[in-house]
Image (cartoon, rainbow, N blue to C red; front, side, top):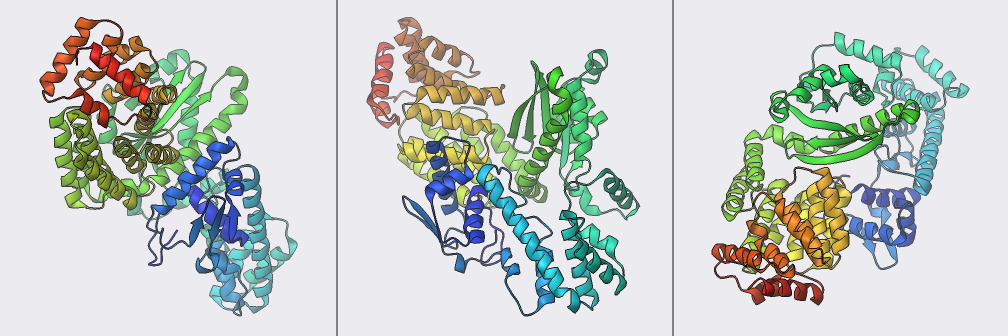
Length: 604
């Protein structure tokens, strides 16, 4: 979507669908229930309405918030469509028939809502119906402009229109006749016309022709800047030779499928197998300039896949696929297509972030240093991370990931010092909101906003922001962890525990904070043994000593509880139990009293 200054502004996909639906249908107002049912037909009504609220919130935080004439109340959503331009305006009547045809053919290079990722039910039927209507309008424009086309550019536009129609209706005799007349008039550049028409599903013959044309054409320097993708098979080459691996064959199929794309550079299967065999895969991936890695492993009768954006070590997509012998013959092509399309889409969505890192390598270096320092849960490491993130922001003050990183350091320091310093939280909220404003599609920005709002006691706002973050990136393990933490504080420990288990499954070599959150959920469920077990999995248990002391206290292990208490007071001599209980943002009083009981039993 473009702002008034012509600059591209990113918005949530569902938000764009709302605007497109209302604008294309020429509806000035639509009920919330209609949109919720249209956009989320396969979920519970309450979840669909929550998703709609989250989408509207994200739309309000974009740079276009003041530009889009969109308003909403408790029942209706309204759009002043007359003040909103659209590429659909090309279909409006015009005196200059040929200029109108040129505008239409340019617009029709892509299908209506071509990049929509998930559409089913009524939404899918509406999109398909509108595509058909656009095709009919194109056909009418071609027939209307055909007698007027005499100049080279007009004939070329006429040919392009004919090609676009014939791709949808190859047996349209009237359009074929117009195409033949256009060929006989002027220069025959039909092959070039075909080349300009986008087709995301090339036939084998066109794919071979395309490959030969690219091989004979001069080298294009921009290809060197395409993001590199490596698909790592689940087994090493030796394991595959000894036992055979259908999963490895599937990944090779997917790799070959991706090789036909022009938007990515694919690491060959042989090299990917060598990377899988390497003892230091991260170093080899970096050496070969790989930006995205599809990591795979066999799990029972299925294949677990996760796509990692290596610059930030973020899992941007994960899925399990069945590989049973009975269904493999029919499933293999479908699985290959699903993985291929998903990777292509996710790479396209994160291309802007990759470009930022390429253009400013020093900024990227500083940012990664900050991320590395944040892996530790000590005050020195958190403060080092903040200094490095600030170095990053000196290179680019609007770099949203670094703004979110600063916010995280401030909330983490607030948690570690346990002094209830509101100034830290206010600064963190400012940075998180700045990150959201700069990049409304950055899950990390909404995540940090949700975390700081949790500690500010804004539990509903926290859960809403984290729901947005999870909608943007449903397989981002750190977002699931933060969402789980807020659910625990919102007196929903069972939901929190389920979500943190999912985060640990996505990120099995997880940070200590994951286990800390799981321990807190277990404590409020009265499962004190499990709380102790989760804390025991942390590499550095000191940050969780308060919770561990309370757990031991509830289990009657007074000596162990007091040992934890001594460590807490050694690290924070000014710790005050009542003051801490006042600032911990628990929704229900029973949570506060249960925590107080455990800490008192521990000797606080």
